[in-house]
Length: 254
Image: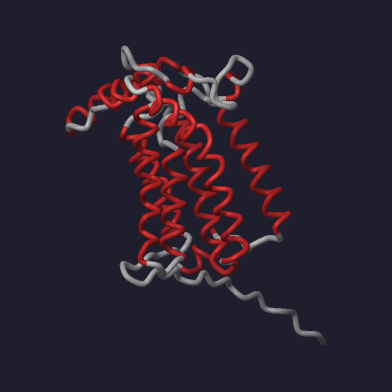
């Protein structure tokens, strides 16, 4: 397990190297995700399957939540900006803080996030899913209702994959943030970080951009690489198992 974790957790780079590598990786991720924006009929069929599963578990409540949101204009506006901004602000800031203040733990934490995002991309390509705003009659996409930064408008419409709902990357990144904060801090207040993924789940469902099962998928897509990268969290004293690298023998001079 330690050998696998060491291979998955590549070393911490200088800050400029980290910025460039993560930036290039995200651009490639976005381009590939857009190229996978097809198969609308299949994506809607998968949405019907998700709805059937949620009905079976008794958790199909997307429409009442969306209707409640649209009845409160101020809350609708807050959720729209939450959806369009925090996802791109909180995670990078936390990565920067971890690089600066938790150097020993940065590599496995960053690697878990990158692997989770890459795994989500595979799911998007293999199993496209239409969001509630495309499949539920009467669902209102509040992001389109409000001109929120880059999240709406004809000029940027082609840069998003409309059928990449499962898993919710908003929830996945929020879960990673909560897990990272809980792992590296020792304060009893560190568990308040879980309010972020909880709030994110409510927002992505209320804005008709994701089903509740998409949020569950976001949790799973982070939990697996978190474990594979050798990361653990104990209940009382947070601990991250140190990821060891396999030493390489130096050649002996004759």
